[in-house]
Image (cartoon, rainbow, N blue to C red; front, top):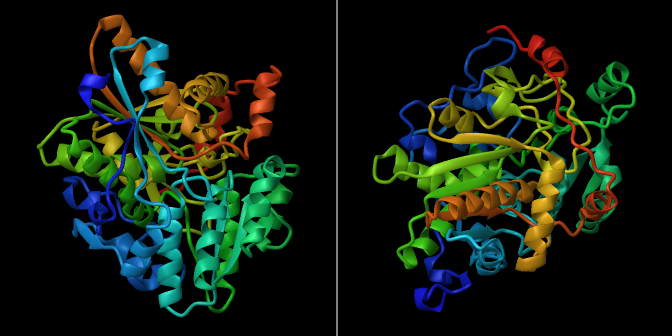
Length: 456
């Protein structure tokens, strides 16, 4: 190990931090299909999107030609509170596995929100503030996004209304309280406070909720409240743009030591972490400069890429949002109460869906108990308790490292450690007590969601 002279943690200096976000759509030969107006079935215009999102964010959502977009100075200043984030060589994990593989992880948990979500939260809050808005509404699954947005809004003096997926609201009360500490109001979704929430409860009494449900409620409140706009923590192209800071930093850190990864792995729910991590590397692949093996890892309980259909679908359960072409299980699909709350979404980013459909990356689904086995193994040797979402990537990183052990190949593996799991101890408790089960939907379970797909 010593002769490699690769430190455990590779940091960039403040001067080396990226000053621009990278927009992978600019290098995609097959662009993601446009968002459609659900009423007209025509591509959404800037004016239409600006009724839901901040105008500048709507522009970013529609921009598939500019490869680089400047990061405003105030956002860069905020980033410096917790960035650059380290790229860590997992020497201890390698030794434990006795693998010839070299394993690195990009750690995004070094902030109070405990995850990468703050990278986009501050950007979206900044543009809302610049537009003169009073506040924003949003949804959150596991709570990292809601926590991050509440922090960003507090910093900028904006009101923040969060609809939290009911099962996560109940499973993760401490993350809810962090949001309230930063001044956000938090409502379990689906709720009786909105028209769409009441409708969902009527159709699905006793439901544990989903990100699709929470999105519907947040959008309804945003469009009916003067001075507010809706912001989203994943799925949208603008979010992948902001999260490209992850991959840009990771690539710069690797380049410092002339390291070229063979395999890049990320957990996949809506796509924010995976898209952010792989974007600059995918750009090189798209331009024919280098080749990488990308692996998206999703829960077997919500397998949008591995078992979903590539079609236009609503982004929310209440069917009030634009239609997006994506790998989807159907907007009416209500996932099981899987502990990886941030991956409990019925569809995948249009950008990542297009890349996957073009054969530029692989997708795998993994069962919950195997994910927690990997999380525990990682925690015991690397000293970080990982979030359940991140642990999906850890699972496959370990699997790939063990393949190298069998073949003797010295592959370099990079994965995204999106955040910490210190607010997820109920899930760890269930795992340790042998109470955790693996739910894998049958084809019959998936059929109603597919049957509800809109006809375009």
